[in-house]
Length: 308
Length: 248
Ligand code: SF4
Ligand code: SF4
Image (cartoon, rainbow over all chains, first blue to last red; front, top):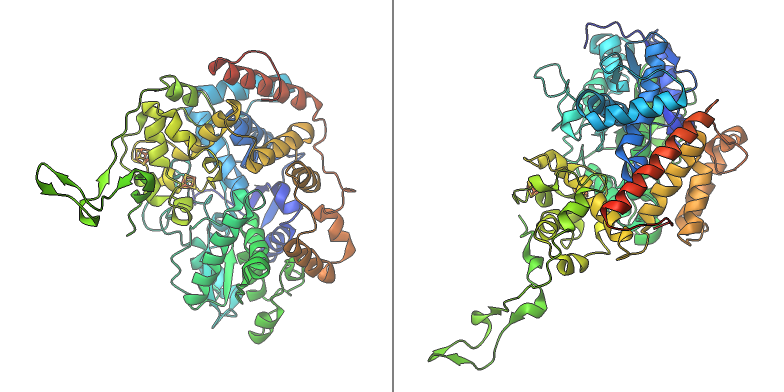
């Protein structure tokens, strides 16, 4: 894990980071650049299969993810970094299935051959999240040194969502004791933001579900789930929710507005990507980390903290 | 801790009598509430196998009914009628009619995998929920849920271009589910965005259909994927004893 050099890794942004989540794309790249890390985008990548393809057929999703891993392999990388929880999850799942599930292996081989490209060799490429990337390639001490406590006094609820930790079996490197990530109570984002000076609140809904799967197809459930997350974070004393997934982030923003419009329940908490908070802590401007590209405005909070 | 399974006794099966004496014992009133006994005769013995043949349902036979899934379930916390453990029980015992009472909510699983995390038997209840919803649609018990429309639209876009075209998917979805695009909250969101965003980003955001992302040289992948998906769909229909083609 940490023995690999991760200063230069393959980068898989995925569809969402090119669309609704581009503020995350921008801030991830900006933070990487500031820290002297190199992200090499996968050539001609395709969608990882999102959640929807799995519901139609598991093997098709595995193939779609594996094609991206095959590209990383061909480009000579042993690590691919995917900041989106959905992509990260799917690539990990493909890796697991191609090592353990004969049906998936056969289907991947067959579709890859027919499509005329090399079949991915399982075990060749490790997928990591942006959180792993920063912790492995830079380390908390260095981030703390760069941030000089600029997030001091900012009360943050760290929200990880579902796909970063569940199901457990696709994350063999987690739950390995000190230094590793926990699937029950993840803490990598907490650690990074604490290093930048933030005051993390005790937040029980770190891995609660925002209903992202039904953000549009069953909006009422999503709104209730999101509202619960927002209100709980506020009750825990947080001023801002830090996110590390574009689907969660957009879901929180969307249903924050929807809760206000349809249920009359207004919440004041801000929602920012952890990369935006970290970037500003390292002295990048709000614009550089795409704060103006978020759906909801956070400028009053940032101003009051002297950030951006 | 709420009693998760309280809803299993339906109100119409609870009986209290104002005046009733059985064998000289007074059993009137609330303290002597009876639960009507049920006789089930129409078991569908094929049900478990059929659902196991749908994507996600493969491990249903492993369930030992511990209830951890229901206890951990996100949707159950919002709606106690949503009960994965109970549905798995009904499927495994073939109680189709009982299952059909809940046919309109099974698709509401949000795929959070809390159940999978909690399950001691690797049943993958999340997959079982999807498989069951799928089975209900294939059998014609329910129409296509908004969620299946979404799955179809996404998959179609991905097989076709290798990517999700957010604009195309959203517009098709709203059209197919007959929802107006002009919903107050959506408008509020989009206007707040328009106010702050440089025009260039709007193209990328995909609310305009001008920008159509595509993977280069995707045509062979498209053919290979389509062929595979068609084959799988035919296999599923065959497992349900359905022949012939047609969109469900
Ligand atoms: S994945 Fe579905 S069934 Fe499982 S806990 Fe989440 S909502 Fe409930
Ligand atoms: S947690 Fe697993 S074993 Fe327990 S009832 Fe649910 S599906 Fe069955």
